Image 1: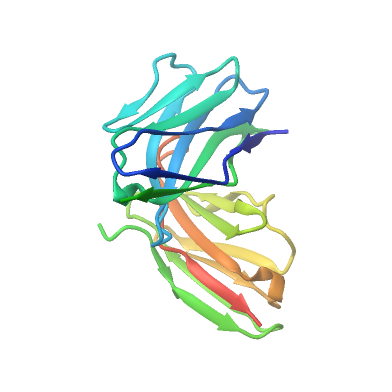
Image 2 (image 1 turned 90 degrees about the horizontal axis):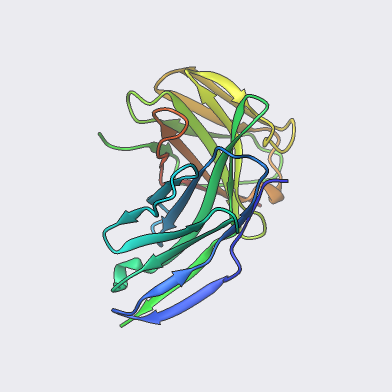
Length: 116
Length: 113
């Protein structure tokens, strides 16, 4: 079964601190893509960062970076210099092919609160 | 571009009524996705279309749910008859290609009494 597990339902840090959100997944596929999405109180889903499984180099987008450990099937998100606007639900997800169709599986999410 | 547009933003209905949710994808996108989000089950993919054709509807929970995409700029998700357990936020998303970012709409919060 293809699953995504986010073991931290909630996290809270002070502004300007660094925070790491964990994500593990289970798949037998070799070709897949991993994503972190952010959902602020507005409910809009926003892509934070994307990682292709065939790339060894960790993806980085400004203050956001990932630690992709393919063998361990781990895909954690690090937010540096956290800001109040980073307060949101964060979802880890991955896409894979299943009998000719793309599937997308999301984790249950981590609620991150940045405190002033 | 205005992004993915969904209507209505909120819908309150009574059990047994028909509910129709609407979505306008981003112009030029060839994939459209319908999701449902609940506290218990998280975010679930219900169905997706490629060039207006349904590709995978294995996530549709029951026959009460149906989705159509009559043209490249419009899709509907219909629930008939609705039940209280259908209460959730329903998202529509679109993308250009399967492996690219999906752009989500603001969602429709459905409450079935």
